[in-house]
Image (cartoon, helix red, strand yellow):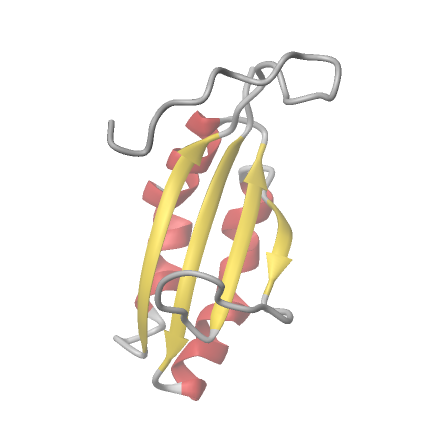
Length: 114
């Protein structure tokens, strides 16, 4: 079964409200098996606009990731932000299929005009 992920890009507008949210969200993440893979850290925006914080949380499944988002515990934590952030958040299913390797032939190229 493929894992589930939250991918969040966030600009904090109210630091105190965001601190209250961070202090409250851990219980919801733990209840659904969430663990941080990325939580802030250095980054370089190599294409497109950036936000000041980037977060990736892994869950045992896509269903767990969605259930966490819609849970009463997470919604209560999110309410503590009181509009103190601008964000994009995706809940997305992971990929368990084949991966690129040097032993596989490269796909045929297509002309740039197509």
